[in-house]
Length: 362
Ligand SMILES: *Cc1c(COP(=O)(O)O)cnc(C)c1O
Image (cartoon, rainbow, N blue to C red):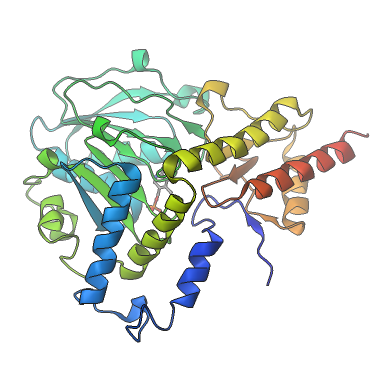
């Protein structure tokens, strides 16, 4: 068996101990005589799995009592519609910060459900930074403000939490959740697709402040109604049972890694290794402004698309997979989520140095 260093932006690497435990429990979960995949979601055994997973998430993230945790489907993308359908019920207005591709999609989708304003954007600079607080135009009457915390495609991240007064802040944390401690109480709602830092695809986690759970817009499907999902403990219908179980295993691993503080230290180490090298390299560079660099998705390029292609090809042959940048940006992207070990990033940097030496000789 060979495991390679997989720099995929998502679905992405899972911790080996998690995969090993899932494998060991595959045929017979804790003496139940069946796989978690085969269990009724209404069974006693499964009820314990989902409740324990929620409890572990609350513990690891320090989620306050007055927040509900939901295990949903449809990816982060369904939240682009679900958030406005449920929250645009007072003034019918919301402010969106567009700092990359996914926040642009969220902004566009929300327009179907109310009066949506652009609170700030870095589009003119090809999203190479995050708009600053003083650049945001915020409406005190808005039902919420929406941001995308970490821009998976462009490789930038919010290093500050926007101050929105009494207006609830909604954040798409798909590509940075569980990567470092976060003060949940600063947010009205946090959502994240699981397939980057939490588990397999198919599960979306929503953390919502209780007072925001209420009657949604009239045409909201029952499956997209937070109130209905809260009332049914995420089990109005069959939830993504196996993905929730894997999230539970990932959370055990997070605790073994020293919780979110431990992971933050590890993630900083990895990101520094890569950025320090990029800053010193003569052929590779990153186009993201230093103060907004993402710890999870590191975008970089060489001088020419041809050399980029040659790099990706050689890297792939050496066992560094999925380094090609998103088609919207070009160049390269190394996604170094929680499960990527420090050794993986070190090995990549060593390989980049070799590549640089070879290509600077001419
Ligand atoms: C991956 C990603 C999405 C899309 O997630 P899906 O689960 O595929 O819908 C949305 N937002 C961010 C920040 C992402 O990284």
